[in-house]
Length: 273
Ligand code: NDP
Image 1 (cartoon, rainbow, N blue to C red):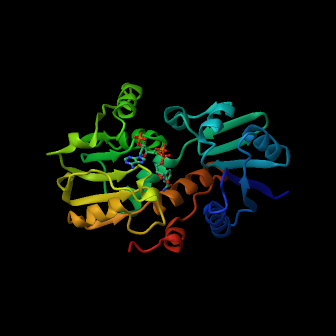
Image 2: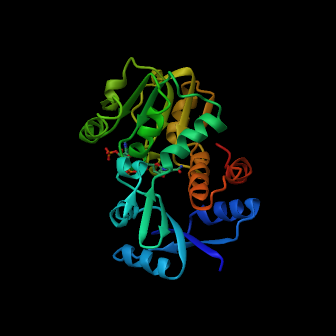
Image 3: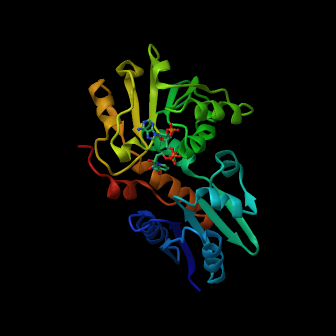
C-alpha cells in the first residue's frame, strides 16, 4: 500500500507542503501520497487518529494546531519539548513521535543555502512567539557570539530567557533597548510580514554586511525587508528556504532519504519587489 502523509492546519488551502513533498517524492523515487487536511478547530486529536487508522504514516502540523500536536505526542523529541510546539509527527504502532524542524530549517537555510555562518556572529531575533522558541536552540548550537531577542511585549522575551537559561544565555528586551547595538544577522520572527506593520527598529541595528531574514515567505518586500534595504543591507531574504528546509528534515525523518532542496526553493521563490 502507498504510504500516506498529510499537512494538517486550519485554514490549509494555501499550504505549499503538498507541492514541496510531492516534488521531494518525485525526485527521490519514494512511493507516497501527501495531501492537505483541514483539521476541525474542536477535533484535532480525532482527526489525527482517523488519519492513523486510515494508514497515515506521518503529518506536518501548522497553525493553529502546533501546541495541540505537542499534547497528543507520546514521544516528543528535544526540538519539540523546547519549542513547546510541534510541526512534524511520525506514527509507529501506538506511538506518536513529535519534532519541531522549523529552527533547524532556518539554520540550514542560512548556513547551507545562503552561505552565512552563524558562528561568532551577533544574532538578533525580533519576536518571541513560537517561531523564535523553535529557532533559539538550533542557532545556539552554531555558537554565535550573542543571541538577542527583542519583542513588543517584554514579558514574553523575559520568559524565553528563563525557559532557555539551562541551554543558552539570551539578551532580551524591547526594541528601544536596541539603540546603539549592531547585529550581523537580524531575523524577523514576528508576524508583521503578514500584517504589513513596521517594527520600531533603529537603522543602525544592521551592520553594513548584515543578513536580514524575514521568516514570512511569499509576501515580497515586507516592511522589515524595506527597512533593511533602506539601511543599506544587501542580503535581504524571505523564509521560503526555511519552509523547504524544514520540509526536507521531516521527509528525511520519515523516509530515511534527504531530498535536494535547491530546485524546490528556486521553484517557490517569489522576487522581493
Ligand atoms: P506568534 O503568533 O507565536 O508570534 C508573533 C510574534 O509577532 C510575537 O512576538 C508578537 O509580539 C509579534 N508581533 C505581532 N504583531 C506585531 C507588531 N505589530 N509589532 C511588533 N511585534 C508584533 O507567531 P510565530 O512565532 O508562530 O510566527 C511568526 C512568523 O514567522 C509568522 O508570521 C509565520 O508566518 C513565520 N513562520 C515562517 C516559517 C517558515 O517556514 N518560513 C515557519 C514558522 C513561522 P507580542 O508578543 O508582543 O504579541
